[in-house]
Image (cartoon, rainbow, N blue to C red):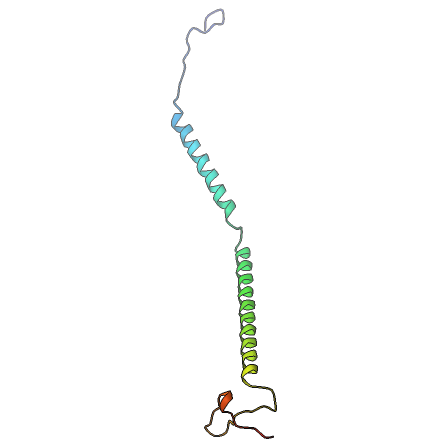
Length: 109
């Protein structure tokens, strides 16, 4: 310093921080991408398990409806094949099977 309090020597330092700024930008972009990916993933496996259980229940109910539908079709079809009591029926004794409607023997009860 001079007698009047002025600096007559000084020194400046410059540092290139371009690489550091680029690395910070890359890290920030990766962090944002990761946050978006994490937001799309359920926080626990519970919701997935509940969803699978609901699908299983739906499948069981659909199977039951189909069983009932097939049973009703079979029942209705058999009612048309086997007439009401008092009509002709075939004998089911021994190794004789039921005959078609036109060849049935008269059942007397």
